[in-house]
Length: 75
Image (cartoon, rainbow, N blue to C red; front, side):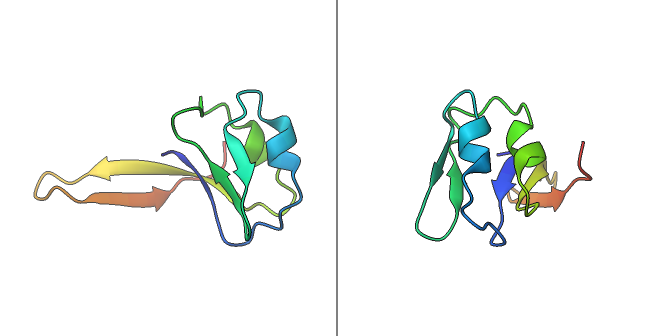
């Protein structure tokens, strides 16, 4: 899942309103992105006033089956 909502989410709704695919919903403590609906357009990240949405890149290690997630600079 390339876009992730972090715990600095303030539940302002800017990401929800801006998502054309309705991939984002608000939970009790932060927004959540449905990976099945997200098209990775980046609108949510750009609209977020608290910079709570980040783009992460998944990398599979050749030596193990685990997935390492690292933050990538904003597009």
